[in-house]
Length: 289
Ligand SMILES: [Ca+2]
Image (cartoon, rainbow, N blue to C red):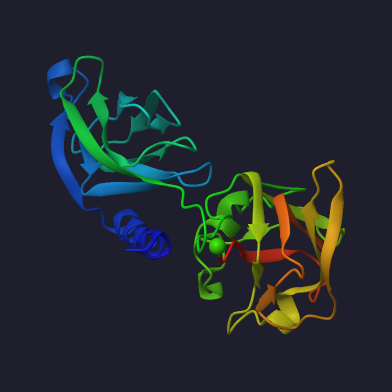
């Protein structure tokens, strides 16, 4: 299965888990004198890409069937090379209610593939539960999308979005909103820049930019209108390899001629068709041969 399909599947399973919750085992904190709160950890294997934007949220449900609210601690211990956003999360669980905790699980760039565990414990002496996480190495070489998973940076990012949204493998504008894509954070102010790095020089044959283009938000009204595609030279200077003007389509493909060897590509957004924000659904960079 390709990494892109994998990520698309993950997005679907994440939504399902967030809505209904498919859970594994259950642990209770009642024996710790903390009330009848139970912990259920997302079942199945969480898949992460070994890249800065390749992490995924692990969901933990805390349910309190009792008539009194409870304060609980969940201790989170990842097995190397996994990294989690939190070592411990403390929360109040209202009576007859539940709380879903999210801990981001990621693997550093360069991590080998494999399956590892994240241990979760309800209370300092509570029973442990284990979540399984599969690490996929970031793809590289001919045919791979070198931008996938980043590292990526931007001049600004709207608070409802993530800078990672345009390198998450999802090119579908119907998933716009906060689920995929990057939206800058400086309304009506241009230029905005979006930069992806490759960790070293790579020969670049193609750059594909997807801007917002959905049934509700067509590119001609909401997509990027004017932008430059630039590559980083060995002396640290940026060179424009393509200037796109008056764009009204959702997908723009650029083939630098001749092929450019570079460690970084950036999009300099000069204007959008809506005049307010720069919106990129996905930026892909390929070395074809
Ligand atoms: Ca995306």
